[in-house]
Image (cartoon, rainbow, N blue to C red):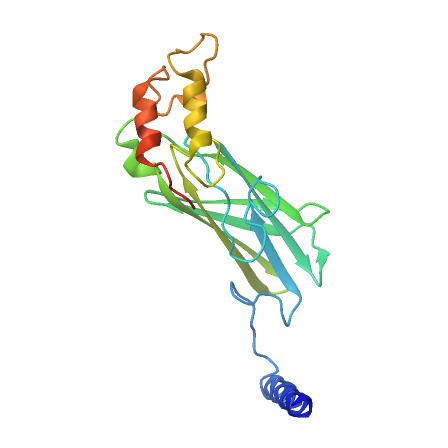
Length: 213
């Protein structure tokens, strides 16, 4: 059995080498297998610590709430070494919000931008809540490399841990009955942004209770 496995592995390696020789100019840089042949890579992620910020290829970040500031970072490398002075384009997409920001990598190969999750006056839940998509793109030695991430914008995941559960209910409960400026007031507990923590806020958390990313 071991001999058969060894011969099979040799055949696979031989087939792969034959393929690479036959197609020497084939580019496999992209979202699924970036940098495997060229050494070029980019990783986009948010301010949450590893692995919760979307670190890695096409990974999600933990959720954000409306009006939170999002920090987007992109680490650009060539053969694992950081690449400085590279212009990175960040594209952010969700419904009517579709915009591009650009920044240049520093000596550590990292570029970053910030933006705030909006909360418009008209129909904000329908327009803002849900999945937001991010694409980061850079040109490294005449080849374009990209990475993507996505995150939810949620009202009721109050601690932004990816689950609506008892911890979120506890946040509202701790501030229940208070208004802005009073002792125990916590703006995070004011889910519907009406200036007080009350039954309406508990009802919203209860509606989404059990949700998980």
